[in-house]
Amino acid sequence: MTTDLIKRVDRVEDASFRSLYTAGEPWGTGWHEQDGVTAVWAGQDDDPSFSCVLNLAASPDPERTLLSMEQVVRAHGGLVLGVDTHPDLENWATEKRLKRLGFERDCQECIWARELAGAIEQRTLSPGLTVERAQASQREVFARVLNAGWNLPLEAARGYIFAATIGMGNWFHYLAYVDESPAGVSVMFVHDCVADCFLSATLPEYRGRGIQTALIERRLVDGLVVRCDLATSQTVVTNASPRNMARQGFTPLYRRWIYGKRLRV
Image (cartoon, rainbow, N blue to C red):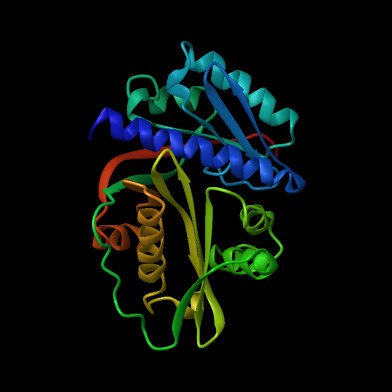
């Protein structure tokens, strides 16, 4: 684990959320910066991975900044606030301290990284499987597939927030089809020569058919084309995503716990 790699990954994560939540303002998203720390919120989304504080270690007084950010997110109608146990917060972000501040463990994530260089091996797609760049005219389809793949209501804001960035600079969106039927989606954000394989989803009826492998490989190829030299991703540790990342040459950079605090009942 190198400090330089972590800092590059931190920067692309921060930049991606700022861009995403600027585009998603019609769905109740926003962001606020203070003391070099960024708070982002996603309206009615109650997942602390999507309404959270980023780069808290940059603050000279993390507790003061966290409490201040909590007030900002509350004022903007956020349902939840998340904070993670970044390596730079190892001594500060103890479970005892975070519980005292009202935060409870939600999930554990693994942060992945791999070098982008040379040719990216792309496996032969399964029969009937195709992957295409999503177009602005496909925002509705993209949003609904993303939501369904994440077990959210089809009209949930999350899918539409990500779909709002289709066509924006630095963003890459993909639709996977099986026999011409939408089956999966993925997103990549590029910043400072880092390709962030941000998010993906597969419809339940199409899982186990190589869709995520195809979507990862396509993003790596496109990241290399736009001259990225590093790829990163964030996954929970309890599903198939870590296995998919390892198969594509990613190695764990670090693990972090996501803690969440409910701001409204």
